[in-house]
Length: 329
Image (cartoon, rainbow, N blue to C red; front, side, top):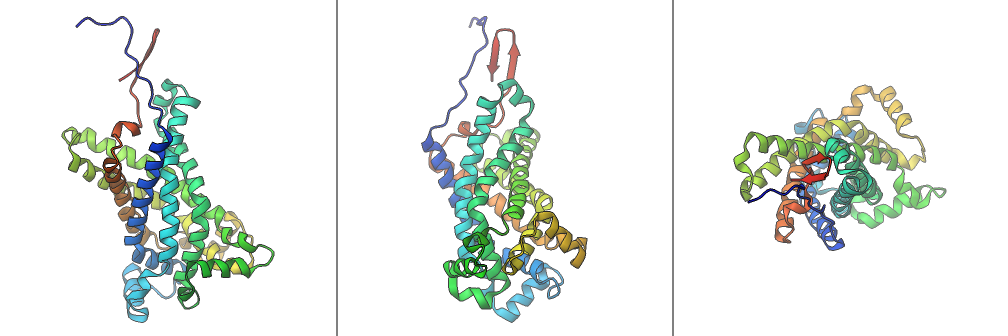
């Protein structure tokens, strides 16, 4: 047919609140399921960080825990994990989608957004992680205490553990649950921003190498699994020092210390060596690869079940700028 003198224009998708709500439900379901399945890995990882002298590696840690405490020990911190990551999934996925949309279509021009895709992904992931950290911090404090000291906290449950931590320091009260907020925020911001960016770039690379996979449902889920595994491992390496500091702060928060991230890191290096910042990295990489690949795969499955088209989550627009406007293809 005849060609128009003006480029075609497509109105950027403006997602309604109902779509963001569905993103939250999908994220909560995916995160709750995956984190629940890998609680045993989380228990071993935390023990390697809190009791490094007792275990030589991840395998020795798992075997020793099973022999001395029984299989029940691998479910320690389950309540806190389920509650914390329900909140995490409920907030981080819709927040990421919103901030991504806002940065691409409201704060920056389409041309600038197309030229700075990676930067926008990092910023959106970091902002989403900040929101998710607000509810995740007290749950992580309770989980770490329960895993590190099961004889004290296992039988009193999540609410009981929250009560004990809140009453340890009368000056802090419930704020004691947020003693690890700075280090958790550093961990989640670094982990979350790298997670989304690495996942998107990994999937792009796979589709570029194997274009025949596009449009095939099962292949798309496989790509999500592969991209998620890569992003989980990479995010773990980047955020491991902050995770170690968080465990250190949460374990010692009863002493009323108000040490910040830098001071806590200095104390760890001074008392335990620089390697303490990366203690448990192997188990955490395995743990994160499993949960992040599962999260993105389940997220895609739930989105499809709710009828949310993949076009609703377009991350990159190919733009053509000319003197008469912007054409989005």
